[in-house]
Image (cartoon, rainbow, N blue to C red; front, top):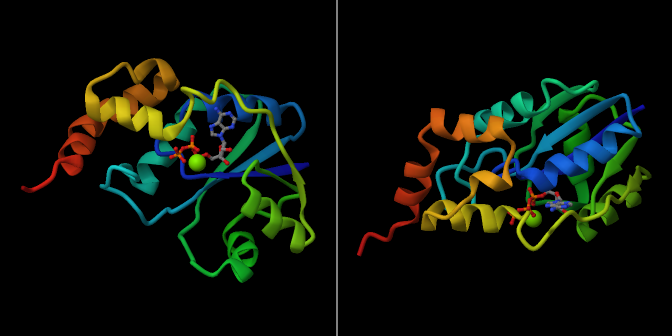
Length: 168
Ligand code: ATP
Ligand code: MG
């Protein structure tokens, strides 16, 4: 079976990584849909789709799981969003999500949806990781080592701090 898991992955953090761990026990292959793929260089969406592909690919390189990272640009038309996703992804049997809108859209389109447990959601949340990056806190602990390396390579902390500054 092939699964599908979508997120913005800004950045890919240990919460996402734990979700993939659980999914890996149920599927042979997994598509990771990189949502809002066109967005980058903002506090909310600092990293490009290509940079997020690097984070995911390097974090999962030792996994016994075939993975595909597929960029999904925003469509802003929920009624046809599942078709949009399917047009960009290898065919999949089951979608994993906890997001009520995403669950609704997949179910209306006849796609099986499974939910995964939340892991340490008080700190394992993209918003918390980005806040720590901007404020100089300990974000490294919240992401896989490979993600730390990618963010160093692209000078990502400098970027998110600079684009979070106001011009006044
Ligand atoms: P943001 O604060 O930027 O929204 P996020 O942590 O919610 O960050 P997303 O890219 O929106 O990250 O996450 C994709 C999916 O992964 C979401 O539907 C969310 O439910 C799930 N997810 C995120 N963090 C965790 C976690 N700690 N445990 C389980 N699932 C998680
Ligand atoms: Mg979220």
